Structures are given as C-alpha cells and as structure tokens.
Length: 195
Figure 1 (cartoon, rainbow, N blue to C red):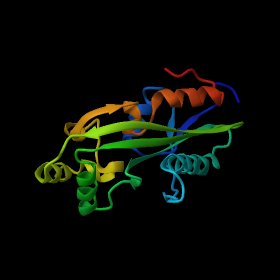
Figure 2: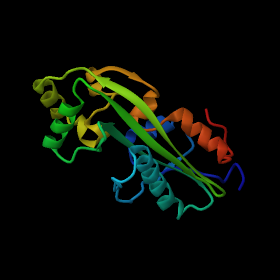
Figure 3: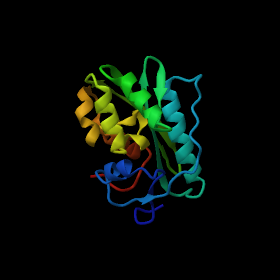
Figure 4: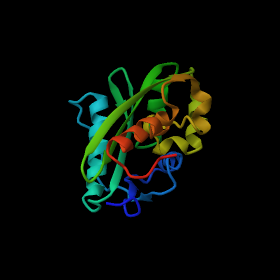
C-alpha cells in the first residue's frame, strides 16, 4: 500500500465528526456504517463505546480491506445510567432534567481498522451542567439541536449555555477525540502525516 493509494474513511455520517476530522486531514471519505447501535448493559460504558466504535469501523472495513477506517461512538453517563441520543422530545426533556446541575461523563470510543492492525480506545471527559429551569430545557429542545446528540446537547452549539465547566478533551465531548485519534492513526501506520 503506497501513500498515494491508502485512503482514510470515516464510518460515520455525523457532521460534527466530519468537521473534527478535517482538523486532522482534508483527505478522507465518508462511508457511514449501517450497523444498528445496541448497548450491552452488562458492560461498563467505556467498553460499550469501544465496542460500538469497533463494530462500526469493522463493518465498513469489510468493503475497504486496504484502507484505514475510523469508527466512533459517544455515550453520556450519570450515576451508572447511559444516555444515548434522545428518541423523542419527552426523552430529551428527561435526559436534560437528569443532567441539570450535575456532573456527568462523556465517553467516546474510537477505533481505527487498518490493513494490518485494529486499535481502539475510550476517551472520557467530565462536564458539569448549571441548574436548568424547565423553560430553559423546553426552549433548547425547541431549537431541535439536542435530538441527534448523545446526552441531548451540543457543547459547541446552542447547548453551550448549559455548561458550567468541563475537563478533558473538548473534541471528545463533541464526538471525536482528535489527539487520541492522531495517536491511533500513527500506531496503525497510516502513511499520511496528520495536520
């Protein structure tokens, strides 16, 4: 595999992950995984995130055996409860009420499948929400922004008003921990030099 023929593929249709990956390289393709996301509630959240990322990457890599495929999955946890994307408006309200005024964890699993090696990692960041009124929650949900986000919010969008503070990787909270991804690409021998 030469530098000119090796492709980098993002196994996600998330616009946020696409924008984050552009910070690493402009040279990639998007091939969304069609895998159904199912949690294994017997596993810790970090292992769930890694397993889902690996499943997504491997499902796309089956059709691209000579390329590097990136899979990712983000979960939000609080008090041993995992929050995925809300299924509807009442679910988004429930999630945001639970996170209101509390610290929670955002865990993103990332996986790189390459021709010779598969590596994955879970990255955890901590986010502390300010207390939210029911009006603030309802107004935010009306924007539509929380409906396709794990934990029902976007730190980089309108949801930033809810954040009191965070620690760890901001790009992880958005959905793709860039520094850790660069390390995995290097360890799997990706032939291009990331930005």
